[in-house]
Structure formats: C-alpha cells, structure tokens
Image: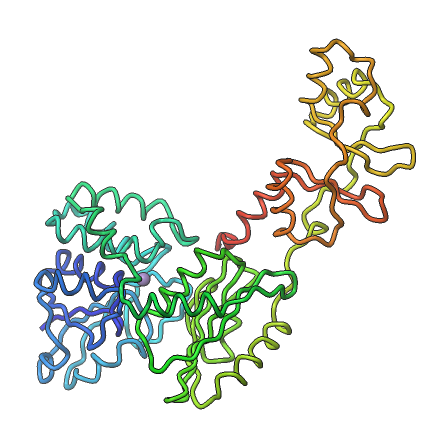
Amino acid sequence: MNIAFGHTNMDLDCLGSLILIKKLFPDFRLVRSGLIHPAAQNLYTFYTQYFDFLTPKDIKGETIENIIIVDTCKAERVSEYFACIRNSEPQIRIYDHHHTEQCNILGAVLEGGKFGANTSLLGKMAMERGIRLLPEEATIALTGIYADTGRLIFENVGRVDFEVSAWLMDMGASLKLVKSFLETIREDEQIQILNQILQAMKTQTIQGHEILLGYLELSENTPGLAAVVEKVMDIHNPDACFAVFSIPKSKTILLIARSQKLKIDLHELLHVYGGGGHQLAASAKISGREGPAFYEEFISYLEQSLTPATRAADVMTKNVQALKEDMSLMEASIFFEKTDLTGAPVLNAEDEVSGFISLRDIMKGRKAAVMNAPVRAYMSKPAATADSNVTMREIERIFYKHHIGHLPIVEDKKLVGIVTRWDYLQYKKRQTSPAEEA
Ligand SMILES: [Mn+2]
C-alpha cells in the first residue's frame, strides 16, 4: 500500500497539497490527521469527499511500501501516522516548502524550494505534467495558496505562486468560494475575544519599535486565537504585536506574536519559550506559569532582547548640498540643473535650515518672471526637519503629515543629512524581504 499525508493539525496549505498529490500520484491513498486546524475546518467539511481520506487507524496492520509527506519535514509533526505504521520499511519522499528547516525524518528524499505555499510546489508539477483538475479541486488548491501567502502578499511569495494560481483559475477555481473559506473570524467567541483584546492592548515603544502588547485571561482554550491576533494587527498596524492569553484553570499561557519587520525576529525571540514558527509569525505555549507574572517578565525580556529600530542616521544621505536664502532663483535653477536634484534645504545667514526649495517653487518664479527674486521669497518655510535619532516610523508620519518628499536632518541646528521618500521606500522593501539566499 502507498500512502500520503501532511502534518498533524492539517491546515489549508496542507489540504491544498494533498488534493494535488491525489492527482499526481493516483496510486497513493491520503491519510488524514486526527486534528484539523480551525482555519481549515470549513473547507474540510464541505469537500471531505474529494479527499477520500483514510484514518491512521485504517493503515494499522497494512504493509506500507511508499510514503509521501507534504508541507513538513519534521518527524515530530507526523508522529501520529508513524505510530500506526509497523512491520514496514517504506520509501519516504517529502514535498516541503519550508526550505530553511532541517529535515529530521530519517532516510527521506526531500524535494523543496522557494514557494510561498506548498500547494504551489505541487501545483507547478501538476501544471507541467498537463494534469486537469475539477473546479472543486482547483478551489481547494487555490485556497491553500491564498492562505499560506496571505493572499499572495507575504514576503515568501514568488512568481511561481502567481503562475500556479493563474493555472488554478483556468481549471475553474472559484474566488468567491476561496474567499469564504478564508474568513478566519466567524465564531461569536472569536469576535468576543477580539473586542476584549482590543480593549486590553496598548502600544509601547521599545528600542524605537512600536509594539502592541496585550494580556487576556480566558476561561478555556479557544480555537482561532491566531486569527484574532492577525485582525488586531490589521487594525493597529504596529511593528509587532504580542498577545498573551492566560488560561488559569489549566495554568497554560499561549503567546501569539506577529511582526512586520525582520529586525523583530519572532522565531529567534520566542525560541527561549519553546516557541515555533518563522521570523514574522510565531507562537509559544508555556505551562505551569501564572499569567500576570509571566506577562511582566515577558515585557522586560522584550526590552532587553529587541534589536534597536532603524533611525534617520542609519539611512540618511550625508554631505547634503544646500542653498542660501539670499541666492536668486536663477542661481538656484542653475544649481538644480547641475546637480540633478529636485529639491534642496535652504540655509540662513547662521547656516541653520530655514526652509526648503523645490524645482516646482522655482517654476512658479519663472512663470511670474521674477528669477532675480531671492530663494527666501519662494521657499517653503519653516522646513520640516528632524534629528538623526528619529525612527523610520516617525519619519513616515512626518512625510504623510507634511506631504513632503525630503526631510532635512539637523543636529544642533546644523544640517547633517537628508532622508528622501526614496530612502524610506528602499528601507520599507528591505525590512520584510530577507537578502536572497545564495
Ligand atoms: Mn505551508
């Protein structure tokens, strides 16, 4: 007998992968986990018949020749199946997109790669082999891709995720159904917890990062807490969010974390608490601790462990060229032509930044035919400035508030640098995309 399965607590990407395994390897039977992730429950209920699952019990006593594992390469995440496989020495093949993880399933042949979703890895194979899908199967697979890629926007997304998604649309996938299966908050309980945690959350600046922190006691463990925390992220848009749920009855603490910056590496941070996940999303379960004491300890742990946020001094261009207030518009115009700049800070007689002049301001002077007028008369003033200690968050706010594209950086009233909109966008790109691996 040949069998295929995914990790325990099957999620949407796991189900998407399995439906494609069924098409790619028709002589393999799918085995279901005893646990279905709450986010996948709805899709599973509607489409069970398309998987034709066996349970781990069904394979007890069978001789297993071949095994395919999807969406994990960790032995501890497939132990429920192996507990039922005896008297067999099967060949094991793994299709897993967690390419940075170390495989610990002995003797297995691993096929992986950089895919936002595991379903995309198998979808690419199916696409290349010219396999056709039923619309329902295409919907299941596309839901898997959308779920694991945050609807094709996460940092792990690559071109191939889009290609496979387009192919699934051709196969008749329904975006309406995909959307309905992705609704993560649908239980009254979840909505209640969302309201409570929103009340409890407060923003704290730690090492220059805007951190949202919250503590909530629950009477029992409730499924779908991660989805609740993701909603909170959407609403508040902090650099990172840490929600501590305490269940006093069982002396358990659930710590759920989400980050928008690689500088706040959650995988690294939650490691000490035995947590799992990746850099931007992780969680940990802590047993035998009192909630309030743990929460307090965790905040001071964050204060000590977070890498300081990027500041103006880290990204600014130094040696900025500036203009003088009493220069004429004509001289300024020549300066812009020579330097290819579109704007520059203006200094007064004391060499302090007193305004900012752009090419557009000079055009106004040209229209009015007053090119002999001093820069002072056409510059915008006072110029928005900031010191070199301001964080990128604060710079973002200044840009939005004043609708400007250049921010002169000043120390002791003297110009020391400039941060442009371009610098800011480059920084934003960097903070969620890790450098390409060799
Ligand atoms: Mn996955």
